[in-house]
Image (cartoon, rainbow, N blue to C red):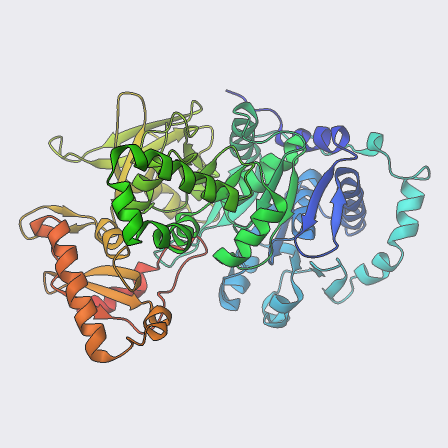
Length: 557
């Protein structure tokens, strides 16, 4: 299936939605209509032209979600450049490496991030621009960017003597097979690779969002996942901008408190999120209600439980703004207890599956067709198969091919060869199964799977999900040590303090009880030998997955 031309989608949208609100920075007075965004893009195009940027030149962007982040991205692709979004959580060394490795000539960055970068290490950059006002923060010797920017208003007047109008929106003709995006992954293995995504890969995701009516003209979304990550970018930003949706950019760390206030104000029509956010809302909003003695009693009475679940569902829907058609959860595994509860109360949620290498979507089903414990149906523009080294194995590696699959890793033919099979399927590194209706079921990463002494497959994520639901456990990591399973636990010290329980003896008693309850709920080969308290939160990727590779050495001690 040849997708609609990716760049022309936006040429059409900016004309079609000229007067509609486009991007708003949450909590600030910065807001743009589609027409104003198109005008800002035209202004940046004049700068690119003045600097004689060519098609295929790379432009990097790093900073919190805001309107200018979106404008810089749009200006790059509609000019024919290749955009390099960098996650703002990356440390300066990683940023230097990515900017240099990608051969970026321009960098758009937040002022605070720029303060921590060393310009002498960014040898290929010709100019650096602020994401707060597009002023030039740095120009290479001999460049005259700052002088041009001082006269950008008169340049606009000279180019558009009748003022900038919707008829003036005319973007480059670039076929969909060209690479338009380099997305550097932030995996849990510690190595960052530049995923080369074409216009067709991006259009595959966006046109899927349009065809299925995920977002429509005049809808509202709250963008709180990092836009430099493929998941939030594809739907909160790219699909939204293609159809005339109003995007409010949070630009803050999405704590439940901040999010709830923003949901109430924005009232989004679709919510794109990762499990951690939903699990925190479950723990903070729902668990206190259902754990009351009177509530437990009421829920045990058959006729009452339905009414109570309806009330809880309404409370949750209202807390999320009350106007969304569904919540799409992706990016990591969902806690099975939370998923089961949401399904029981008929909450409109669905779980999708994807990876950066597919820009990102592989499978999805609307909430009313979603099969619990699955990760949705494989998209009609994608194929999936389960590869088993041993035909008798229950599970195999999920391998995919189709419209959304990347062309490879930038300047890394070896990694590209490793990730594709000889017959052209992308190895996802995830283990799972596929049913007769093409629903995908994911059990875990092949890299994290532990083989027990009796030959059983152990998925630490499944044990962690159970442990995280036990009292005073904020997060956990199950590792193998001397052929035994050990759980590292970061305790909820705040709650312990508030109850006066933060004493070594109390903690030991609580965790001993947790260990007993955990081992009563898992298979014999999944039993954990001990809980070891960990002093700090575990380091995470921007997708909020724990960087497991950092803790392997602890396992070996």
